[in-house]
Length: 203
Image (cartoon, rainbow, N blue to C red; front, side, top):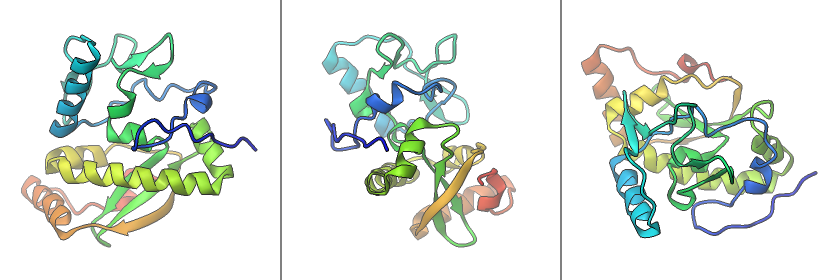
């Protein structure tokens, strides 16, 4: 069993480059991780301090995300090193990696899912190292809960509509009434029925 080294250089998560370097999938391609206004400022400030100049950092459709290259890669992905140029301040879903989430308005819970090892090498390692999974899940929860708080209702609902196939539920936590009301109000005003976890093709 391959153990993960604790090579933390930030308080947000471990570095998983030694695992991801071996992966045949490109999670930095066609990913479009959501970026809040707060995260935008953090990333822009980081780039300025590092002396990195990148034109047009973000795009926006139903929510904001890092601009993609013509090949669909995140603008912050370095194809030579296969590392992120903004690793220590990257978007919350990038920190969470193979951990994804859904919101069930019927139960008032945020539900946590782990991607299948068929589509994520890191998930495969986490399956085999329960202690590492618990550590990473704890980090992922903090990041994704912050994301849910900071996104506006329209952006959050758009993200929840993105299909996440080949995942399975590994836990759940209660959501604040404020967040539940934010989503419910938006859906009521948009004429959309209440959101249920089963709507999102998470398995």
